[in-house]
Image (cartoon, rainbow, N blue to C red):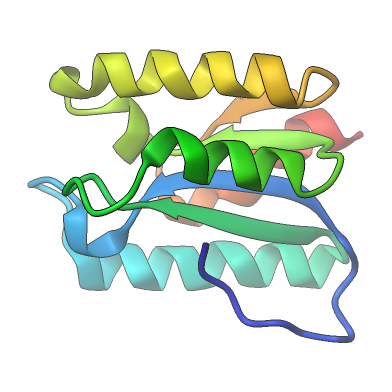
Length: 130
């Protein structure tokens, strides 16, 4: 998991499960994605909503299921956002299914949301925070 600790930030209520920037598939540009993530994270901060990212490395260097499970079990989540890189491209369908089932198993009270870009992650989560 990546993220800086801000002692003034509210406790995370939203977990974002996404593919690590360096493993984004074309046509996604890692630099533009980083900008989108920063913008999206700022929206959470502006709204006083704590967010945490769980970034997955899909190169075989980590046990993705263990990483997701650890993040899901780290606290109670109100919303889990599953980012587009987990859902697309089509060859990631099995990964997407595994993540959905892990959320169902380890965070059964959390709403599940989907963003369309990193920059609209706050909007995706806020649909379920009200």
